[in-house]
Length: 499
Image (cartoon, rainbow, N blue to C red; front, top):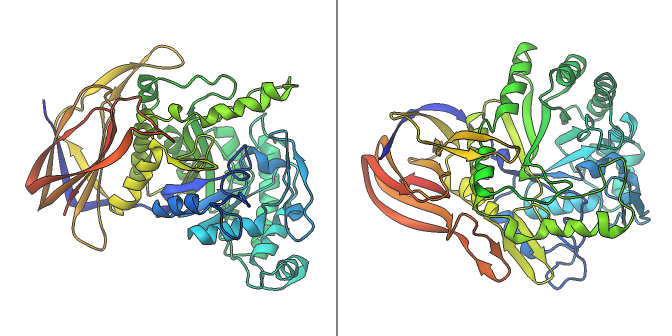
């Protein structure tokens, strides 16, 4: 049975920010060292950066890169990682030594190589408001004060003009070093923001939040006038202690209410009349949480085999299947539909661990999620259009990893157009693990139809160093005379362009 959708190409719902396709990188396992920063590797440039990874990031036009954490930042002191005298330190978040050879100057150099905006997350755990504002001085002041002069002495005469700054990471959580109560958090953020804005009035500030009324209301009442963003995080398939990835069907259960935290935070902003001033930065998200057992626990692992070695399981490429791709497309659809309030999102992380890119000494693998970003960045329009369903949306019942079942829609659709040229682009996700879906699009537009399909030879298909089972295929779909019928394969992400 065909499912009919009507699109009004003249009814623009909103204009999405390119920063919805942002990325994140942290000092965890092989993301920085032995990952993107690997001096001496034949694939690295004169500055020690892997050129193959940078080219892959440039292909998906990474707009903004959040750094250095994450949990890492809550015991990170930036001053130890600039200048000629670098001081290694023991990272108490992840229980490893960090050599501090990759610091602020290297990060800015990386952003410039990629062509993206930097987004610095500050230490609100063991750090102070003064330390945070000193960091802003180093990056943004022309020459005033010791920290701008320090940057100049380090060979960087022009200010970096970092626009985006986050005060803290997940400081509401017991797992975070320097966790705070809601009252403590409001006071710390207010004083930090005050000092940071005094240094750089045009800097845009965010602060760690979650969809908890007490935490957010205290934060917004205390700090609303100082903030430009509110930061939220979410992972759905939680695996910090046990590395048991959810099945394809269990992952589809997570798409039920995928934007619940956005709706909850939106309501709080509206209640305080801040929805016109503060936007949401969904600046850590991924289907699957990172695996790091015996670290965020009261009783710590003693032998490295119990807490460090297991992190290698994050880099098992067979984990990242069409389930990850389909879920990620559904998430991006939801953020696009909320583009009036969500101005930034950061996939966590971009490289290794659960990243969309995997690297080893010999090269890279583009995981299934990489191709989702490729499609959404390079094939969709920038204006989100209204659409409505003329038939009842098909649904399916799937098991939930936590127990029980969920009934979810089989299709997830997003309609867009370009603001600078003619044409439509529709993202159509078929979540069903095994059944094809016929979709009839009533567009009111004529043109040539092209379909870009992301799929695999099974729902559990994945890419690895010796196999490519997930790829994008292009299909010429004929002429659209105001109406076109297309078939969506099972477990697939599709971009349908009417040009």
